[in-house]
Image (tube, rainbow, N blue to C red):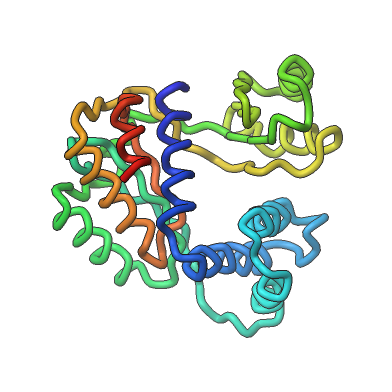
Length: 251
């Protein structure tokens, strides 16, 4: 998990620095709208909607924006048919990349992503071209303040999780994809709504990024992917040394 957590942390920091707030809100609103359309409008009865709202609040999205996104989903004003799609390929430094998209027009999304890959030293591949470098898991994340590491470990394993890793900021709970719902529900009874609960791609084979220039190209490439309105998440198997990470943060 070390490479996964390391890159997750730098991406969180870069995201906070680089992304425009309006674009973040737009993506959060789309997820809220889709969650409201595909399930019950009550977040207490709709886990996906509840977590979408929680994610929006964690980004300080205004309450009015959240309510409008819910209303759009349940009021019939949004007639778009969104698809959840996965794209795979390689970025700078031959790093494996998975892009998760939520789109109402795959004929728009695929060419846009292909252009970003091609123009930035990468290559968009076929489905399955890089997922062998990753493990599909259920992933739940709580802030470290909700419980001690031992308490979270015991509760999570009792709920059916396969592993827990805690650091100074978070508890990361891992389970089989099919167990995500039951584990999340069990933990919510004790610890409340998690920061994150979703299917996740966790790298099992890391690709070293050994020089600053390649790391910079990779970060710019990921920023461009994240700037696309249809892209919800970008996952890589990049393994960036701590000294290069530090230089990226300064840049």
